[in-house]
Amino acid sequence: MSSDMILAAGEAANPLLPNWWEVLVTAVGFIVLVYVVTKFIAPAFEKSYQDRVAAIEGGLEKAEAAQNEANELLAQYKAQLLEARTEANGIREEARNEGAAILADLKEKAASESARITEQAHTQIEAERVAAVASLRNEVGTLATSLASKIVGEALNDDERSARVVDRFLADLETQQNAGASN
Image (cartoon, rainbow, N blue to C red; front, side, top):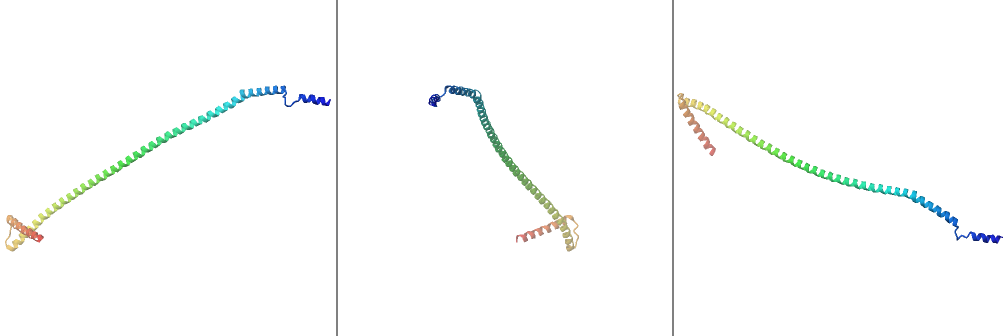
């Protein structure tokens, strides 16, 4: 019996031949597993994958938009900076021109004031010289008349004669002075 049993058991349990019930149960389990994975798990993974892709692409788009906006702002900033520098240079040049104009105006005013003061001084000096000459003529005339009166011994009260004597004396004095200056 033992050999029959071994033989019968050997025929039933051939490891190379599968048990059809096991194959059927395994196939049904596999089909259920594939159904559950494709119906519930795969869509959840796909949704998660799509969300992640959308988030990454949206983040890239946002970063690209932010980069473009930053580049535009940088270009605007550079344009404003260039404009400000140009305006500052213009203001600086205008200030230089105004300074030069003010300086030229002040120099012109100083020159005209100097010329006016010099002219006024010359006029005053000339007036003082004329007054001094007139005063000296009178004093010299009086002295010459009194000296001539003492020398001649007679009074020269006649104004016309006194004026002639004084004029002749002064003319002689100027002639001597001019002759001495030319030597």
